[in-house]
Amino acid sequence: MTAFIVERKHGVKSGPPENKMGIKSSNTAELYFDDVKIPVENVLGGVGNGFKVAMNVLNNGRFGMAAAMAGTMRNVIKQSVAQANTRQQFGHLINNYGAIQEKLARMSMVHYVTESMAYHISGTMDDGGKDYQLEAAISKVYGSEAAWFTTDEAIQIFGGMGFMKATGLERVLRDLRIFRIFEGSNDVMRLFVALTGMQYAGGHLRELQKALKNPVGNLGLVVNEGLTRGFRKIGIRRGDPSFGDLVNPALKDSADLVSHSVGQFGETVEALLAKYRQGIVDEQFILKRVADAAIDIYAMTVSLSRATRSIKEAKNTAGYETKLVSTFCHEAAQRVSQNLGLTRSSRDVANFKAMSELAQEMCQQGGVVQEHPLGF
Image (cartoon, rainbow, N blue to C red):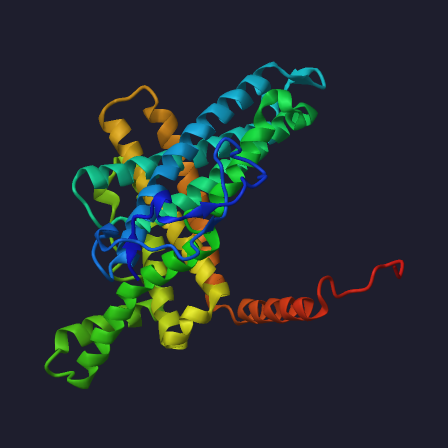
């Protein structure tokens, strides 16, 4: 694959602008390259390096999306809080009701995580880091879904008024929908995250297989691996990374949850690779759960890093951030455990197979398979 700089003077033609759901200020049109000839000096990045060029472009686009989504959410949350502080129902401001409080708190948590991801990746790039494609993909997935969730909840807080154009929220929601599709759809990005995360585990297993062919010459590796797996069998986790000394003591419990989640992730991935081997690339039901676990682990990590910095610098919001991150990590660790557990549960794997069969039958029938209750 080779990348080219293509100019209109080369004969490229475009169709009329598409009538889109959102981002209407940005024209989208079909391009036609019939008999277009590109001069050799317009090759970009060298012959055969087009895929690398495309990935660099996508990486830059993905990391910027988290920042854009964080800014959007900040404004949406401000509108939501103003509504909660002024709207009365049943004789009380709605900010007194638990249902509204939970919405606001969750909006704040996912915004904090998205913003933390954006600045973590930016810092990595500023420090000269080149390998941030995985983090960029995760931030794209998380940020686009967090912004959709936040805006949807904002409309709910506004009630019927949220459905009206006057609030501006319906336009935000329409504009946001594309972010889960372009720069690599979130479905594809989850497969990328899962398979990339499995590469290291696959390499480790290959090294272990080599060592087992010569156990005497690789006694240390074999014994250590055997002890680790033996301890796991009796419920003792050995070899999980420790993050407790990297965060403020107020966040140590949350850091321990991350450590445990990372250990669970590694153990699960090794088991999946041992079971499916190269066939894991076709197990998309399973890969989605692995990706969601990886995304939550990264979300916990960047949030803990940011909150620790706020405590260290004695920021006015340090106490709030500590409470927010502790709450988020508690729930995220539960999701990690649940998602990883689904991949190893025979009953849930059977469910995945059943869903595959149901979908195939729908496609064969051209839509809904079951009959209408009234026989229509």
